[in-house]
Image 1: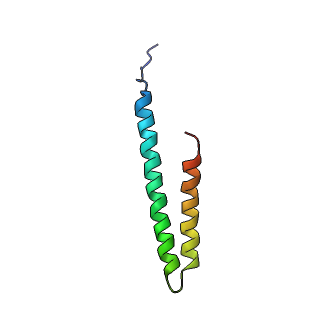
Image 2 (image 1 turned 135 degrees about the vertical axis):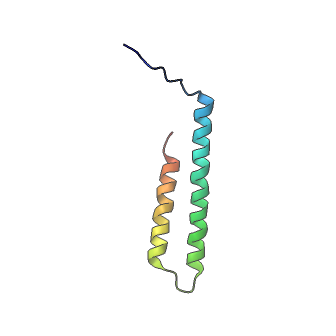
Image 3 (image 1 turned 180 degrees about the vertical axis):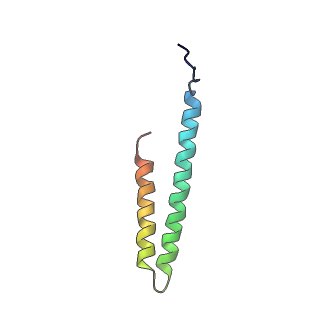
Length: 68
């Protein structure tokens, strides 16, 4: 029987990938925060847009809080 060896991902690379993922989520969270603020400042904010943006922001926040 032949087994293919998959090189183990060094811990440093894994931590770096997790950090990059967290940074990307954090950036998306900030953008959504800015979009929510901008929509809220409009004379007549679109409540459906606000609800959608807030749901997206919450999903990202939950993903950021998940243990790696």
